[in-house]
Length: 394
Image 1 (cartoon, helix red, strand yellow):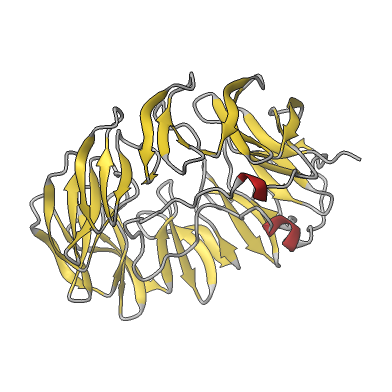
Image 2 (image 1 turned 60 degrees about the horizontal axis):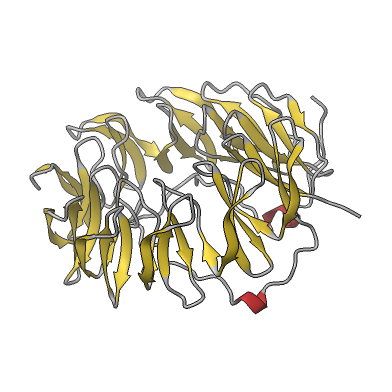
């Protein structure tokens, strides 16, 4: 594959991010997300985009014309688009499915999409554009596992797909969505865990709580982390200043300034020795040692050599790495798919990865072969076989 020179980084940081997956986590890692809605600007605040957005297929062909000032990714066969200061939806053929006449709209999830009226009220529409949940809500988030977080005054609860309140708005904060059947919540200044029907599974007596993974929930008490089971019984007593959730039966914990990996019995599988440690997907754990990044497997054996300036979590078996200030792609076994030759890279999705070159954004496949050359001003990730692209026209 032809080698490209790095693009000026500022251009690609504008409106883009390198990856959705971070390489390390904060002290209180994986907190109960308390995402709130940022409402769109008033209609009159929008200017027409100089370069419009359309969609390309996997060969890089423009299959939906660049007619839109802004677009989002396709989900469930429909996509949010903006013309001027109004939002609506198109289908994969570029046909308008829901009129472009709303103050705001969000991506479809579980058959419904959030839509904002010009009265600043949120409701949920189906794919025919009919209101399933009338626009009466001050604030609500997308459905996941059949629940939508909503706000009533200063408290939060959850709706079901019919718009019924299944968990009353009695909590000071709740997770943005349920992870499986559980969510973290806060009441009277303390944290606990509720199930999808609103039953309080873990009592509200902790400084932090995190939803169950591998049958254990990470909780913080008296400044230290431990793990409890579904009955609230301590399985691993609070003893860690920093700890992560369990994935594949293992969790990174920090002791005396170093991270190791424990099993669900609290026994070390990997002794504490790393400056940072996180689950990187595909039976790999990212590690940092002497300020260099790599990955170990579930036995603690080196899977990706610890020699990179930066390394991000695996997506579809491929990770982004940085070496000599440039970026490339590597597989879960440490084999380089590309050399370090890009200004920026983004995680693989649907078998394709994005990379920034001096000439523009390119798309490569999992063999490192060029699939879409730099013919567009900007390209985003593929979703349902289509990627949004910003077209440069003179």
